Length: 136
Image 1 (cartoon, rainbow, N blue to C red):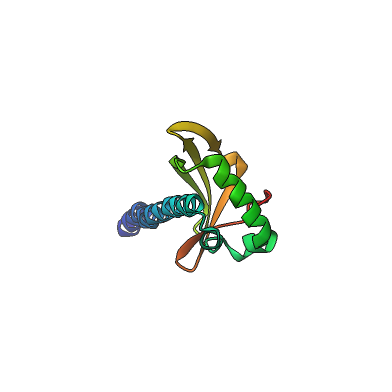
Image 2 (image 1 turned 90 degrees about the vertical axis):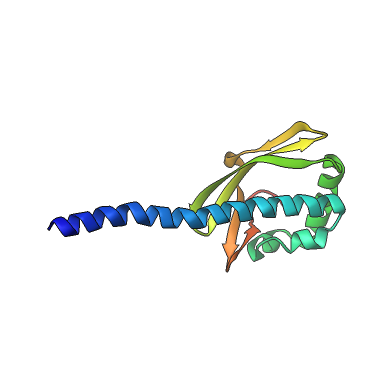
């Protein structure tokens, strides 16, 4: 009986640690994706940015609409924009909501909060920007 209790305690300690290890890689991947999206936006590489979205996103946001809004965002943000204070809230192993701050000319420009639901989804082994119910 003691061995079973001891084994249960060891498993209870090890399993969360194993699950969190993947979470660390996933957090880095999502942060990297967010940085990549901003870099592509600043360079005007909109097709490449659009390719970083899920099929669900593309169903709700056809490329011409995405292109209009991406161009507008690029003109508003300028070339000095960057993101920081990125936080990830995993809803499941394959779905996450991201919060971050956008800086323009080194000053806070806007916050994207968890409440706005900027969603990301893992398809296969990669993370993608997902449709979050807001206009694209």
